[in-house]
Image (spheres, chains in turn blue, green):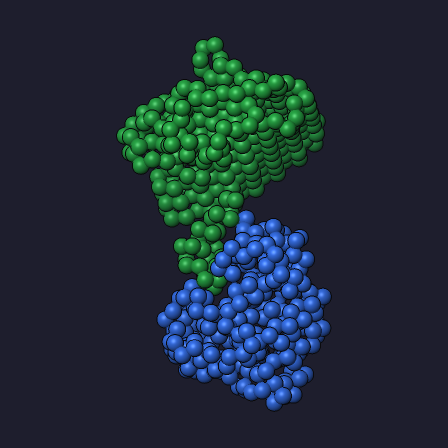
Length: 248
Length: 306
């Protein structure tokens, strides 16, 4: 179980201080599939980075399975069982997909096992296992590999920051199925996804709406989703292409 | 026979754990330690004792030559001239390499000068690894010189690797390519401590359809210094590409000087050079997979040089 208590995050420049996250309290129960949505620039990605330890909150506490992890590093949190899939996956010259999967799994994962994870995200494994995680891969391919690394880790909490960002419509439709399968298996751990996509919101157990750095709504999908439909927080897969998508 | 230190050096530079198959010449502390020739590959010592001649008969296929050199005696300095005469239509692998273990206070130095005469339509894969070990204050110095003459339609792939322990290197490589000849050079280099490594390539494309690709990937750590000077000259309708991609760390310094000279309207030449530190997001990504910052850095460097 993940608990955020009174989390705030401020940035200051020469002119003024800006609050990106304001006093957020949030609990992610075990075995739950939770989707965070809300307008662009509302602080969703920052909150995900606070959970992973990439961004240090200005105030507040974070507990993971009852343990205070506020002061713990990215590495320590990863080892405790928190995974984080980047919105824009990182490229590495020379590091092969198999290397990355092995680092993620924390062991000498067999080629067959690595292929299993890649197949799960819809990549023809044998074509990819020896590929370098570099600029030769498309955005959609990188995104899938990013998700496969999180699967290979198999941790208690997996956080995905806008899995739909930066990929084409066709890739996205296929990616949704990956999350649908994951949702069916949430007994293996809880999942937190930042997304605007109606189809992802549709499979959530709980939905959290964040705007201007605060939680404005949080509850079971049945309760929250009807209020969101037709707004920018729950777009169908096509309309984001007319709007240009969210790169925040 | 060779001692344990020398055997370990051989394993590092030539991936050899036992006596290799095929032709070989092993040089240890300035002396020939072992030699084998085959029906197609002859190795003879030069009359003045300055090195060896390797002659490969035309049409020799799928054979290999290993000529590793090891130095474990502090203070030894030598210059060795090895000439390769590769017949037409050959397809062979040549593995050279030098390992120095210097536990003493005097500098140890091996300057290997290799000349290759590659016959028509021959295909060569050449691997050269450098490695230094030993904790003495004496320096481990390697200055390889390579001179390549490629006849029509021949191709050569050169893999030059220096990952660890060599204090000072000046590598000079020149190549002359006739029509249709094709040269690929892949250099992988890592320097640390106060090491210095200079790589100087000059590739001249003299015949129509000649092509060359000179690629260096390097990592400079601590206060080490690297200079990559690569020049491709096109004297005919030809194509050439040179690329230097370097990671800089700590207080290291890197100088990259790609140069192109076109003396023909149809010489298509390209150069690329990039020097940069490890991206912070790469380290963060690997940390989210459970690695420490140091482990992440190591993985990034290892991958880059693989």
